[in-house]
Image (cartoon, rainbow, N blue to C red; front, side):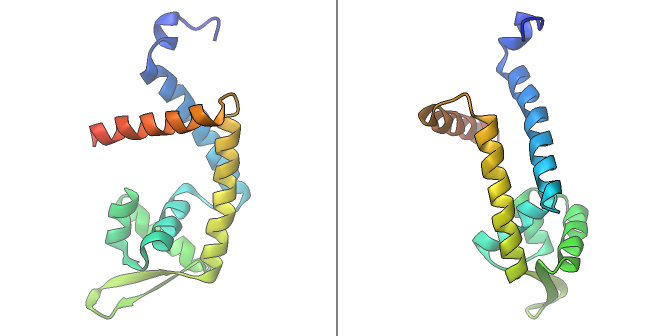
Amino acid sequence: MDEIPERLTAKPSWLITQLAVHVRRLVSDGFAAAGARGYHYRILAALHESGPASQAELGRRCRVDRSDVVAAVGQLVELGQVDRTPDPDHGRRNRVTLTEAGLRQLRRMDEVLDQVQADLLAPLPEEDRRTLARLLKQVLAHHE
């Protein structure tokens, strides 16, 4: 960072952007090695934490565009990680449910993300890691 203008390195927005590029690559590479994608993780995690849902609900929970949810759920169905069945309470809606294979994949992806966090935050002691996470949540909540 010696050659980068201090005007940039002093700005949290620039630092966050640079880290985002780096962490996106780490996560993408890790998920690819596990045969998965980021949208898969979001959907599997939402189903695990909140139970079966419609594709529209998953889009809202995961902040994923509806068409991307449909494509990702289709991929997860093909992989046997979720079931998609007609919703008995609403004829025009599908209900998506996590399978045992999906739960196993979610656990593998959790391990990938845990390793990414450890690699990304390696220079920080544990207390600073918790502080950073708390501050980032606070800033994000403010802008939502």
